[in-house]
Length: 474
Image (tube, rainbow, N blue to C red; front, side, top):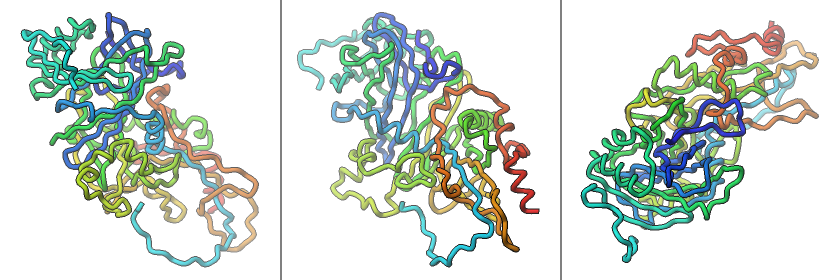
């Protein structure tokens, strides 16, 4: 049996991240996947898939099984540092900022006007075949990378693959055979990454494996997620970050929706931001069943506001730019040309085994902007998104503190926002991380949103801060 569990740090958690394959345990041991992060890089027909998985269970050998479109070679697979995933996740996560209203009597000095521009932002020779011809399973390749012993399998039928895995001492979860079938019919192979637990450090029964990266060429750009639903009893979250040159992506086979953004929150939301965001996300899905939510689409070398530093050339190489066609053609692209800059797209899906009948297929999408501090008469009117010539969309939320000092001028100008008053330290931009593990309360969005949210037909709360601001303008 294979299940998914929430991260132990959240004793109240009720959900977990989905996995784009599944775990099979040697000797029938029970394993628990509690977190998966996926970053895809795409150029032409080349896909680079990087993923980090943690597991909780007994320190015995186990394996991951992932469908892949081609036979991978050793040079196609490598392990990565774990740091890159936290960087990408934090950069694209929904963020909370704080703004203070500036002195309404302040007269700023004249500034030079600058034009606004876009963001420039071997199979071993003595190895004996381990599969029986009658099962229709063939070992296409076998090699080791880091703590992983990797086997690439092809199969003629799903039952044969299931029997092969069982004969090789892996206990397959009930219901696997029907989910194997469509991948075999498509001619896909199976990436089986077995882990030697002697090479893994365990702490409190938890092991964080070295992230894996592999690349392949395929006309299709998709992510296999159905195998991860085997025996899933609860809803699962899947967050996919996609990097592509000057290109945003969305799903082609499910509805798409952008998360409501540019929402002002009441001050108490500062300590409850993850709860607010989960509530907002769930309400958005309720209005858009089976949709995949776009939470971020921005040039990866810039951000505003920034919960962490943007990605560097080294980060791009770690995630796969070193094996893209443009890097291996002998004529690498100019990284400073805006047309070659990477766009980071964050897609968020939440589903169970009954609501997702197919894998995620991606398609190129037009650029969008939204979630920026563009004000009109002190109000932020960019709550949704609009199409544009480059990508600048983010899930961004703000707490605003109105001016409370003296007003000693006849024509005060309200609605100018910036840093805190002298002597007060501004809080850092806060990212909503680990939202799959946050307790879900549908009412949080109504209790914490000050701004009306048109997409959800919500009027918004009248906080003391908001009331003070409105009174000061009368």
